[in-house]
Length: 482
Image (cartoon, rainbow, N blue to C red; front, side):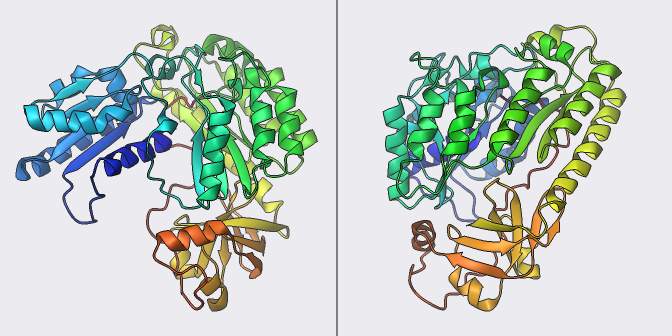
């Protein structure tokens, strides 16, 4: 969701006449799009603002803007703690950024503008997408849940749904631009339709995406177990371009803790969904979010979480140590655990999940996968003569290429490979590329990067910069969404 908003912010600024600053230059405008899910987000923002102050002092006219969830939460506190900030805007009015920057420049004083409800649906704003071949499509914003650990509903507001026709029109426009994969976004994506009274709206939307010619892959995140209905599972299994991948937050395996979290499902319900998904799509990769150390969590509660992890056999898990967020009910609960207890449980959970992830990935050795070739996902690809891609189930695969294949294969194209090794967080395919399928997405990448789509003999090289973090357990506290 934050990446999607950042692309909109970039698009807004470029639409207003700004240009992206070149590397190794000082930007005229620096925008922080913040998160408030975990406490370390606060610390990072104010630390980064402090580091930026000397640069601003040395460059008169430089502007700093802070937006997103932390801005919605802290409001004028940001300018009080960092008076060199020029603009503060919230989650509901990201479209105001260019106007606020201009107003701050003319009036020579900080502009703080926080709206209490959504001003413009983000997907109606200009966008500068980072990828030529994959795109985010927001189907809803906000959340109607009241999880006791989560600060997001108070910052993003109640759920607002887009009309299905608007979503599909955006999907078709993206495909026309060469996009091969879309990810449908919502704070609680499978509750989509609640605002206009259609409980099967999300499964219908998945099936409609299956009818978009040229759309190769459809993903979505994040669903809530409470709203996960059988019609969604059927739509996933029966729609060829909906990928066999599910990220569904567990948060805790203890039904007692889930009740305290106000999560409105219990262990049995969660495992039942996992079982139905596996029955319909045996090849599906299921991942999750888990919080360790929620107030009042006992050793028995934690063992229940480990039990669910063993039963569900997640492909991966984002694991977080509980982070106290002022303003949430959990912050006022009794039974906050000592740091050393939480850390010890966290390490046990990570160790177990790493073992399971490695075992599940090793099961795929010898299997043949068609990968959507990606850009910049392997930090050591250059030295090891590899490219990277995503399997249908979204597992990351690093695969070896020869000179001829490197000349032909572009991000956005498809490559068929055989898995030769499974590590906890990725797969390796070093036996060579079996087949290459060029796509319009690859053409779009070539056009964006100044390459002729059909020109032979262009060495693409190994992507080495801008690599996002590989999915792996988080190192410090947080809550996860969904």
